[in-house]
Length: 364
Image (cartoon, rainbow, N blue to C red):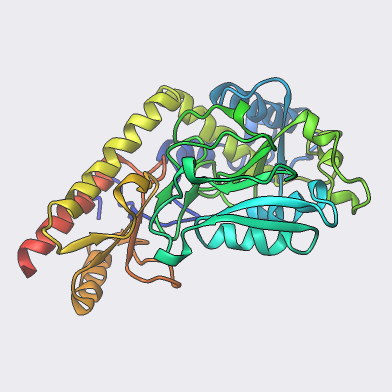
C-alpha cells in the first residue's frame, strides 16, 4: 500500500483510477460549486454554471484530441454497449452490409447487435488463437458496398491494441473506450469514435461520441427519438437531463491531461509505465507469460499468466494483501491483468513490477 496517501495500487479495468488531483479538486467543490451554494449534482443542467462546465468540456476535448470542426461532440448515456445498437440503427439499413473486425469480446457484442438491423460481416477475426493479436492491416479486405467499418481500438480482456489504423473507403467507426486520449490520433481518419468514460475520461455514466457531420446527414430517421444522433447534436447533448456530475468530472480530467503536457506527454508516460511491467514479464524466463503477441501489446491492459496455476492464485492473493487492486484477469479468460490507464501513476506500475520480480525470486 502506498503509505504517502493510503491510496491503493489501483489496476482496475473500469471503473478505473482517476487522477488524485481531480478527486481532490472535486472534493473541494462538492458541496459548494463556484460559490453557488449548491453541488454541481444539485444544479439545473440548463443553468449558466453547468452550461459553462458542459461547453468547457467539449472545447477542451476538441483541442486536446485535435478534433476537426466538421465533427460533432456528444455526451451521451448507456455506455459503449448502447452504441453497439445505435450505430447500426442509424447507419445500417435492412439488407445492407457493414464490415466488422473481431478482436475480442466487445467487438463480438457489437457485431451481435448489428445483426438485428442489417447484414454485418466479420471480415477478419483472431478468435482462433484466443485473440492474441490484432489482424495485419495489409490483410484486411473490405466490402465495396459496406455502410461502415467497425473496429475496437483496444481490447481490455485480451490486452491487445491497434498500432496502425486501416485506410477505408467506408466510414471507419471505432470503439475507443479503453484507450481514448492515451495517445494522439488522427481523428479525420474516422467517421465516428465512441468511448465509455470510465477508463481514461472520468467516472462511469458518460459516453463520448465524436461523429463526422456528413455521416449524420445519411442517418436513418425512422427510429426512436432518443436513439437518433441528430436528436443529441441538435440539442448539444441536452435533449434530456445529462449525467451532470460525470460531465463535470470529465472536464476536470481533461484539465489534468492539459496540465500533464497534452497527449504526446501522456503517450510517453504510458509507454514508460507499460514497459516496466512488460519487462518484468519478458525477463522472467517463462515464469510470467504475456497473452498478447508482442506486435499487438496494449499500453492500457497488460494481460499475463503465472507459470503454475497454484502459484498464480498465490500471486494474486499476495498482491491483494500488498495493496494491489484489480489484478485478476477477466472472468472469461482468467489469469492476471494490470490496467495502466492514463491516471495510473508511474510509481504504481513500478511497485507492481518490483512485486513481480520479488515474487519470482521467492518462488523460482
